[in-house]
Length: 171
Image (tube, rainbow, N blue to C red; front, side, top):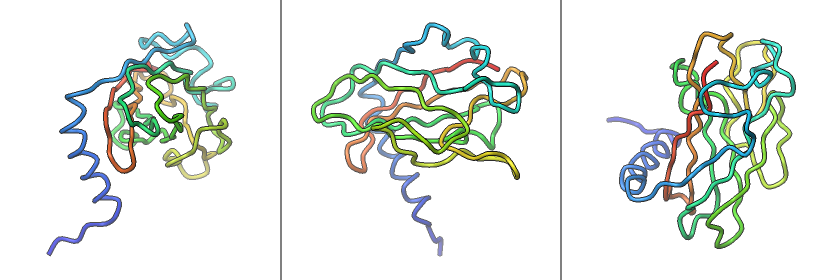
């Protein structure tokens, strides 16, 4: 008899929902800071372990949000590091005003649990022993050309209505 944890049930449900809905609807995401080009992580936006200077997520404009979406969830990943995939760099949620089809999402600073108004930490990033924790861990591969992405998901209740993956860049 296989036993499922709540976490595995949520993950399986989200995967099944994404399989059905993500192919039908995609959102458009643009970085509002020109330093973020999706190719290379901007200088200073790496983790403090590698001399980052007030590193933070890029602020974004999200458009084409499906009708009925209540929030946007941002899942930050280092796809080059298996341990840091699937939200290894943190997961945050941005509450949407009722009926919103677009949103201006502020940046979230790294290495802290303090997040902007309207944003909630869903899962802190996976830190190493003795490392500072927080809602978002900036790119921290030491310049080994790892690829960093963010999965932007539109949620209504327990259902993912759409998902778009954006490349943040390499570091």
